[in-house]
Image (cartoon, rainbow, N blue to C red; front, top):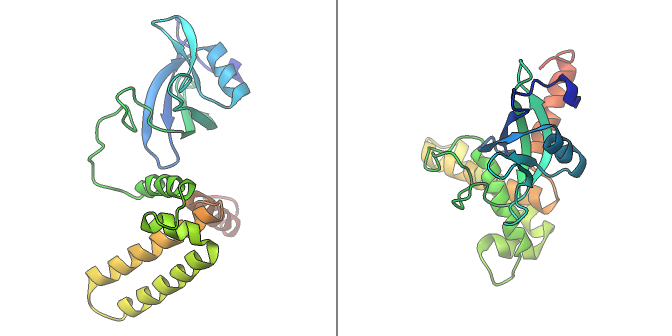
Length: 207
């Protein structure tokens, strides 16, 4: 990123909107040239505190850091969209996001939240723990077997007229597929990128 192409305000600041991989908007804060450069140099999102008149790296005291993935600008180059992996809650209230709406109906990006939960379960793999902890403790072979079992259940349910049962089995399959991806150090985002790449190739490079 060329910082010189950005349009900072009269106060030398530019707003940064932080979004995680699931699509959730985590927070908004201000950056100046120094904090933006620190973000790019360290890989951890750093802002400018207007109240303290100093740099602050998100999570420097709480540990809830924001690991930089990508920074994009809007069409006028005066707003930053910061894509980051959040290591814990992003709001000082201890909530995932600074914006209200934690109780909104789940949408496709919620799968990113589920994936984060599964990663925490993997870190706590325990033969005597929860269902997911036990599966992670048993390893890739056991998880892969569950994916095969659930795929069979989806096929059987698809042959019937019970939509609720079919969706339930499909949910079980997707859940266990996410487990397998996490076990292998991958994510649904990786799968989406493969699909997107294939589509771009077949459509001549356009999406």
